[in-house]
Length: 563
Ligand SMILES: Cc1cc2nc3c(=O)[nH]c(=O)nc-3n(C[C@H](O)[C@H](O)[C@H](O)COP(=O)(O)OP(=O)(O)OC[C@H]3O[C@@H](n4cnc5c(N)ncnc54)[C@H](O)[C@@H]3O)c2cc1C
Image (cartoon, rainbow, N blue to C red):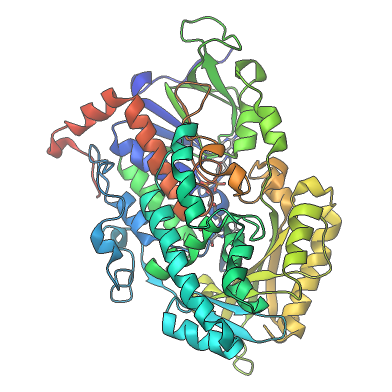
């Protein structure tokens, strides 16, 4: 039996977080500000989880999130200090809702953020290409949006006005008022159900959009965004129409140096506040006891007591939060005898988000053939509803595909060697419940996608200009990121897996155990994951008021703040 690691603070003040994704790092910063001595243990050799960085031959590729929204959430984390946890401040101060609050002199991060990284707004938010080569530049400006709708289908203009009004109502109720609600009991959920029906926010997003727009193109423009958080527009509830308004209200942003620079900023902030990040430290087991020193029984009280790493090392603490995949946390890290109910059944019956094939590639700039792309490009294939059904339900690899093409060098040339571009293109594919052999299918799909980008003129001559290329597929999500069935975004955000139905931030069966990140409430995508950290922090404050109150009363001059 390995000996426990020598404690540096009493176990009651120690906190352990499994995983250094956006959720783990955000919670780590919050716990340090609340007076805990926090260690994040990360299986991989770098931080960031899905937001890891791949560097190759002078290129920097963000491997995951690239569309940064709600920079205010980042600012909130960057202004925390030891003993100053900010959990009682309003979640959305009035100034944040003022017109123009989102862009200040071209820099959008706020004064605390700018000490750690530089965030700039991106316009348009997305260029959305349709299969016939036409496109829609979406930038949140209603006038510009109206002009483009008119060019596609003038008859849809009145529908847009109604969509705008109804999406705003959903945003105000669903995001500003209810966004931070921790649905820990059924009652809290039942209370909001009438509102959801009144807002028509329970029907699926695509059908919701179809009520306002006759044009297939516009139905796609106003429903595709949930794919960036793992939601099938044909199945996510229309409450997700709020994404449209979140983007419109606070814009879309880019962190200079890439999302990896934001991960580094979070790590720096966490360490400045005294937290410890341990890399290459995979967790094998969440340790549990019965609260009285005996072996835990299936129905008795169960209390978390620490973690056992894969190399046998034991870390003791009274508080453990898992930022790892929900399915993996419950199926692999908690032995079945310590669970009062059968999470295996739940995990197996859950709907898991789709997976992805992502191609990272660098290519030479060619002044003879300048790129006519934007920073964020959505390239829709010939089919929309049928393709989504192939990916999410039939779980087959279709002949056609849609993709999100990211070209950060159009904003930030430092991401590639001089005279070159760095890019990635992301293709939604079925998760590993499909039985597809990605060792065979992956390389074939990569060639097909790059050929398409070249031959259809998105990047003319690409195959001759390309200098580096690599890709990930569902094997990466299941293997490296330890995601159940290789899902890319956690449990699919359907109505029956949202709010109270979604895994709770405070474990329902083990005291001292919490969840944070895309697998917990409110859901996936970087803003939601940062919200999840705040919600989990609030649960922890309720449970551990002793530690938090003690930290609040520390004299200001003794606090670790920002350097
Ligand atoms: C390609 C891609 C593009 C995306 N684009 C966007 C976007 O543009 N905008 C947006 O908002 N969202 C986007 N998303 C979604 C967003 O990236 C995620 O929702 C978010 O980053 C998830 O963060 P997380 O903290 O929940 O988990 P993760 O980032 O998955 O972190 C979990 C961490 O836990 C670690 N871990 C797992 N098991 C163990 C173990 N046993 N021991 C120790 N550590 C362990 C993992 O290694 C990982 O580091 C994208 C996702 C992908 C995959």
